[in-house]
Amino acid sequence: MIVKLENDFCKIENNNLKSQLTKKGIGFKKELDFYIDLYETFYLFCKNKITVKKDSKNLSKKEILEICKKNIKDFENKFLVYEDLKNQGYIVKDGTSFGFDFRVYKNKNEHTEFVVDVIKSQKDTINKIIKSERLATTINAKCVLAIVSLEKKIIKIKIEKL
Image (cartoon, rainbow, N blue to C red; front, top):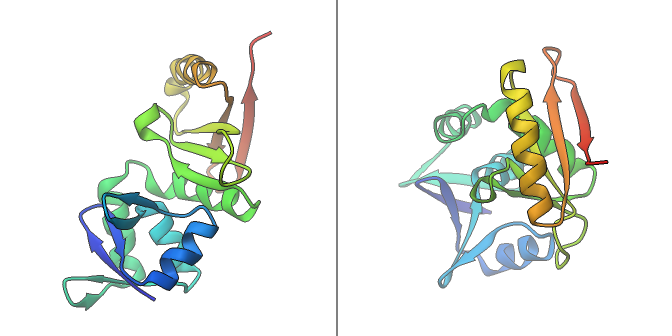
């Protein structure tokens, strides 16, 4: 299925694809149109579910990755965490408008199960832990920090107040 890149989202025009994605908790409506974000785009492209076009040109994996890296800081590490969560069966949504990297759901119509922040460097850790835990508490969700090692292994830490 073909999707069209528009800025930092892909527009879905095929009604069958819209329906399939909606059932899986992927994508979002904006006015009358349906879009997927860059994480969803790259994930679906890597799974050979979509072809991405910009103007009238099909984009390669390398070109899509460059667009993702340009628009999302530390995309590669964040995508590893995104993909890991998707492969575990979770619905994963961008969480930047809430102050997190991701919002994670068990089922499509439920409240946020937990939020995830991806930690890149040690100096960011303490401030990010405090901020993330406070924000998670305000939306009544669990807080998880994901650390991607140099070997590209993911360590997830759940943060809770005593």
